[in-house]
Length: 372
Image (cartoon, rainbow, N blue to C red):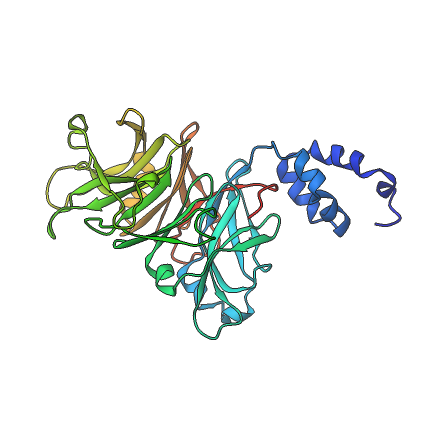
């Protein structure tokens, strides 16, 4: 590379040339050689492309068996990585996580170009989980203040668009903004009526579904809590409901929440009940959208019947994603279903690393300029 004519060009000229490439091609060029990697990760170049929109990708969480053994290998011999899917190119690829000094990194969430994961310290003989923010494109990371291992087992990690972090359980919540009380977690009581289902942190508020029904019949309610209302004793959860909503929660079986497009839309996804009996069958999967400003619901999507038949035969399925796209996986399916609010429904083949077909994931807006 030293004798290549490209070295005769000044760095400014090379920056302008490479800045004309799409972000996907810049990522490929960085892996060509050490010279390109240094050139395309320099501060000058990242400032030039700082206004580029991110790549909207789907990141898959590792399967549960990945934490124990994989293909006859112990976890110590496995090079950690995360599978991602590019819906624009209909292509699977992966990011290596071998730059992290942790055993068994378990990605759980993402926001604004950063992936958040639990990792075991290499130096500790005991299981001591740390929550880590990293950018796999720049291979940089930051370890958040230490937490007990119980939070990684029982808590749900939530991150908003400005990378404020919350770890939420039924009884308590931890909150971290990186700017309060000397880089520490703040702890609060949750006082929710039941275990929060698919909580979402957005628009400076936390939203969660809770089952307030009986052991024989579920009754789901939507609860919210503003971050500004956090106090030492309680978190001021409020049940969101309007008379105009009618039986909106009664027609959905096993509802889940996802972040909608922007900070003013919330998605609720679940099976559309065919009757109001105690354990009804579902006719399809319904996507509803709540406008958080007007508190009005609308139907955003409905899975086609020929696609739903595959999920109808499965005893369990997962919903993940958010924004303009929602993804669905089911046991023994071998592929994902995707809803795109602009292009409708389609199948995604070639899902890697999941023998039973049941996978989970989250949206990853990849950026070369985001630093932990």
